[in-house]
Structure formats: structure tokens, C-alpha cells
Image 1: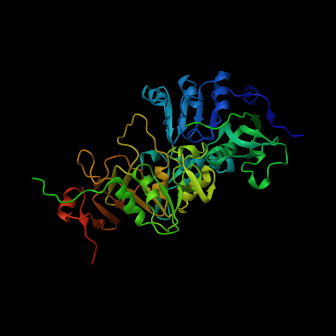
Image 2: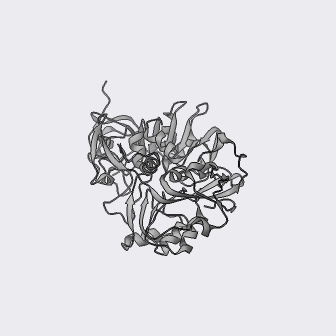
Image 3: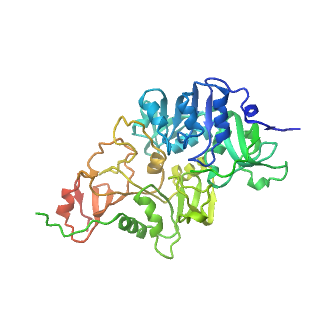
Length: 226
Length: 219
């Protein structure tokens, strides 16, 4: 029998180590695996690289990891936090490295990693300072920048419904980066609002098939708050 | 002595002017600020499908407080609604729509636009305290058309339409049309071409507020 469910956040995060690269789903407050991210804080690991669209939200999750100095490098498209200036303070003090990536390039680099594509060319960013030092080639009359796939050791994602095989559905704007993070990590851990018996999720509605998911923890916390 | 007899368009009037140019059936992404207002100004009887980077097509008007769905936000992290026919998708698909040229239009704010269509709208200096780009570069490069909504001048009275951008570029040669509080200007192979000016404005006055040569349409 396949059973990817675990009882606790601590169990879900067992084996994560110093220096790991984490891929975090979520956009704004919606679709964030906040309980898993806070669980990382409890494990005590540090020197982390974090890939996330925003530098967290409010005072929770990634904002706490940043504040506690656990993160060495952030790979991000929009490193702003509503209601917190923790990232700006660390960045200004030179205490965190930032790799700024256009949002679509960020998603595509993870998708590429999940699909076995080591690198790709895109016109996004050509001629801007985000292309500095990158190989440029001309396709269809346009300059295109070589971007490399972005994989992670661990993905922390949030689902709406899951089953013991790790099949996942999402809710509304809660989908966002979660499916691409799930594809791109060596170990994908999902926290889910609802855990359903195997066979009850409509196969037509499963967005992330269980092949991309390693562990599932059931955390019914209710609605995200902006 | 100030001899001007014209009144600049308000933010809402700029948005309405833009909306009047969007035909039925287009798929459109709106940036933050004035572009967001365009959604409320679509003329009666036209169906325009609005897209958000975080995985929505078919965005409707903002909800009343009692009707907020906490799972339904746009790329500006504001609560929105979904119209009948709307859909959800993940970020890689969302940016495939943008980068793959499937969106008919994006409307963006900008700090500067150059006469060759270069756009600067994400950073005001080479060493921002904490730079953030979001989807601006993807949108500027990927959508079929890029229209910019901005005031003609900065708060300090400097032109925003320039020969070369001095702020860090978002994308090269990507803007098609600029809607300001004073004029509508096309970006062409000849440079800036004035399509429209507000009532009472003269070409000489507009030129004096523009950092590159303005051309009139060829007859």
C-alpha cells in the first residue's frame, strides 16, 4: 500500500538539512504552506536558499525565517512583504543574497527543472540588467537570454484536497506556483486543508498527480488572511 | 503668464480613453495603478477577458466586503471576483499565456518610455535598496501589444517620453502606444507620432513637454 500521509509537520520535515534549497509555493497570502515553513524554523536548520515569488507576507512563515537569519539567499521576483520590512533591512545590511528573476522566468525555470530541460532561451529580460553576464542569442529577430533550470531539494506547497497517493487539487488563486514547485524538487511536501479517501478525488480535477508528491500532512487551518 | 486653456485628463479619464480602444474579445492584462482602472471602464456590450499573473482569466469587479472570497486575489493582492466563464491555472501556464504571445494586450504604468519603444517601469536607480520586478519584464516582452498609461510629466515637471530611458530598462523596443493625461502617442519606426491631443493643446506646447521629437501622422 502507498501511503504518503504523515501525522505531524515535524515528521513531514524529517531529514531536511542545513544548506538546502527550498521551493515555496504561494502568491501573497494565498496558497502558502505556512505551517510547513514555520516547521522549518522549529527544525533549526540554517544557511538555506529559498525560491519564492514574494519575500513572504505579514509576520509569518518566510518572514519569520528571514527574521531569524536562517536564509542565506533568496531567489525571488518580487521581494516585498506587505506589513514587514525584514527583507529590506537584511538586504540593505548585506546580510542576505538576492537573485532577482522575472516572474515568468522563475516559473519556467522550475517547470524546466521538473521536465528535464536543463536550460532555455527567452526574450524576457534581454537588454536589461537582469541579463548581465548571461549568454544571449538571436532567435526570430530578437535577443534571447539563456536561463538555467531551477531545482530544489525540498518543495513546500499547499493543496486544497489530497489523498494518500499525494494527488492534489487547489482552490482558486491558491494554485499559483504550487504545481511547478511540486515538479521541480527532489522531495515535495504538501500541507492540505482536506484529506480525502483514495478514489474520491475526481481524476478530471487533479492538478498535481501524486507522482510529484512525496509527503502529505493534513492541516485544516481555514482561509488565508491578507 | 500661464496661457494654457487645457485641462489634463484625470486618472479615470485616461483609463476610460484606453478602455474605449479595446475591442470585444481581447484577452488583456492590466498593471497596477491607472491600468487597473481600465477594467471598470469597458464600454457596455463588449466582452473583454482580464488576466492576472497568479492564475486567473475572466476577472470581474471588486467584491463588496460581505462577498470577499479570501482565496481569490489578483496580482496586486487585491480581492477580486471571477466572471462566469472564468478559469484558474498555475503560474507556468499563466506565464505561457503572457510569454507565448496569447494575450492581445497589456496595459502598464511606466516611469519612462523612449522613442524606440524602450520601457522603464520597475526601478528608479541602478542600486535600489530592494529591487522588485514581478512580471513586468515578461509582460513587456511577451504580449502582442503593450500600451502604457502614465502622466506626460513627472511630479518635478520632467518629460517621461524621452529619447533614451535613463532609468533601468524593463524591456527593449516593446511599447506600441502611450496614453497620457495630455495625449495619445503611437510608437512607430519614425518615433513618437501624435494620434490625439486633449482639447486646447497645441503641438508646440506638447513638444515642449516631451523629451524627444513628436511627429504628426503621415497624411
